[in-house]
Image: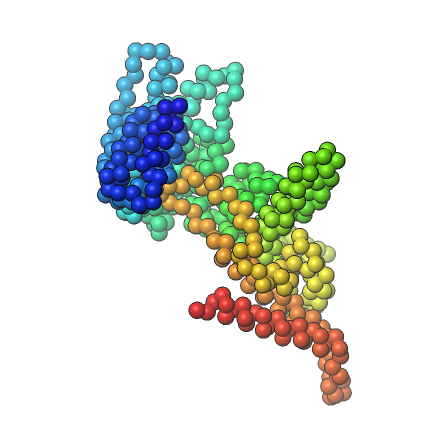
Length: 465
């Protein structure tokens, strides 16, 4: 109840968009009062105050500077080296150390947020080495917790001090964005954190970002797999890895993960009809309508589905089918893709047949998809899984970029397929005489010309000012 009262007070101060200087100072004081009261008591104190820090930063940059001094003072006071055990029980000492750790993390996060809002270089931030030292001390709390709960379940997802590793890595990526040596240090810290707390997804996401910068995509893929993302999470979380796979040369893995997304949508479409029928049988028509709307408005127009179909088309010719042995197909481009071989005609014909299937990758070639704008699609990506990032944020492709890139892929592959079919319909001269033009050739040539005109229009719209 006390937290609610303080938060309400802060909210009332920051209610208006144009806050005067006096109100900004009042908000700053309210933030400090809240932090002094709850920083050591609850782990969510920073997330509670984050919206108000943003309001304050948008209103008065000068009001943020005292908060930086306050946060640094709190951090120095709560450092583990300043802790002396009381004469109380071990259990009381354990609780006190955890409370001090919560306060320390709160102070560091506030200082990170202030630096981000001020747009400074972060020279006055806590040294990342201090964070690593504090993490090493915090690992003792995990050991103590395991000893005290030998016969009961212990929380596996997060361990005390995990955030210290995340904060240290964020600082390294923020302050040294192009220093490859610091990338190695950041990767080392992330791996140490994962080794100590293997179930923390935020540590894995942090490490994946580091490895993407080191071009170590294979390790990023391994960490992504260990997160065990399944079912509907594929639609909301696959954006973490899909852009990295093709760029890192993992074409098989790119097609595999994209196929998982496409199959999810195909199975969901089938299940929706079954769930609607059950809801109607039970007389809950409103629930049946919810299933229908969810399928139509969120799943059928999913941005992740569109992106995955385009990536499958791009990477299909590069899929590897294992080691080449006698009698086995060629490892690369053995079954899919336009590759300039005799098999192109059959493959092109098969892809044309699949364009009507909304849950097939070739459907990206259809006219409706090629003409739709970003407003048509539902962005189901869950960006809250990046909420732990304060100083440094993962680079995320925008919705408009994904739609534009998917349309470009559709035009490119559509042009390739039409070219193959036109070349198949063309007959070479016999005895020096040009063969007559057939109706099929005319239709395919007209289709190729239309595709070229459509692609030209798209390029003028998307890539010219």
